[in-house]
Image (cartoon, rainbow, N blue to C red; front, top):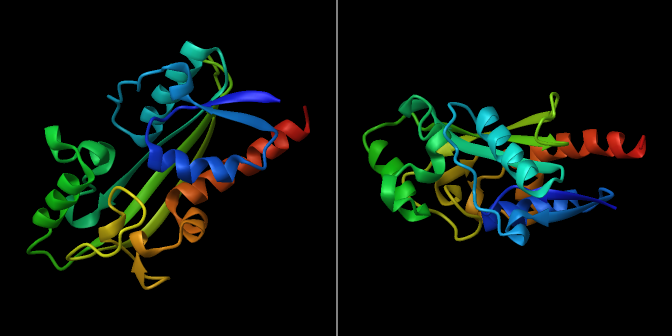
Length: 199
């Protein structure tokens, strides 16, 4: 069975990603298994940052890698937090601090549309000239205060109109299907199924 590195140290992401990859003929190994530190994400887009993470994992493990870069884009904040979603609050960079900053920035705004984006990448090796790139999007609104205790990141303030609750109130199996990461990963899994069924 082909081993593939999951290029993330984010336990929340790993918990969401691993079940969706379980139907593939792959052995998914988190990068922590290799004592691999996170890559420096210094690019300007989700795609470029995901490529950096995947290439970093491939270079250090000599294995194919799957990487994700994702973030929240709030319309009234000109797309912020965007690529700095995880570190929006600066040095504090905790879920609480990040949420507090978004809520403070939106305090006097009624326009609260937002989207989560996820870019999933499969890279065969560090010099792979044609990695598989899949994008997922999840539309919603930013709440005025936290709701729910599940999920991670900005989930407690992300209202999901289709389900009339926050992302933090969704059962994990529902979130996996409808979220930005779920959409991107479903697309990636479909491509990888074809790839490995032909091998």
